[in-house]
Length: 209
Image (cartoon, rainbow, N blue to C red; front, side):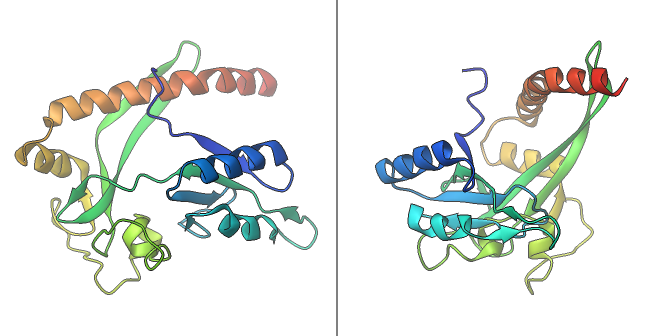
């Protein structure tokens, strides 16, 4: 329950057949939208929304990599949150930053400012006609900066990239949780995430020393 903020996740490729079979059964039993991200991707490249396993099946047959290092396509698949919190009808994300200064003992500092990135197309519930509209569903700067509606104003509380503090303030002023309580949640999520990562970090340090 402490980690119920993590959505159910599958890592699927032609080499992970049990995960593929479980995902196919889940999608058949629970209609909805799923987001598929290539494991070696960045900047929103290759991210797809699908509503049936047949759409994903074709993606798994692709081959990625250079000529001397070819590998089957691999995707991280999660159930898509199709009722996100919106500001002015636009989907956004929150980027928070923490620096880890020690692993043993674990010590980290959270920067109490961040970045909110906004889509550039008003949000609609995912359906066949808009599943491929990246500027509606993906908040990546690399995706939205090419849209003619991208707002590059330098004001901290307007535009397609805003200070996270301004977004938390807007949520509070609209009757939502206070900015202080939102930062408390961010701190708790950061702590839990780092605690989950710590065993692997310790293992990597031991291996490299």
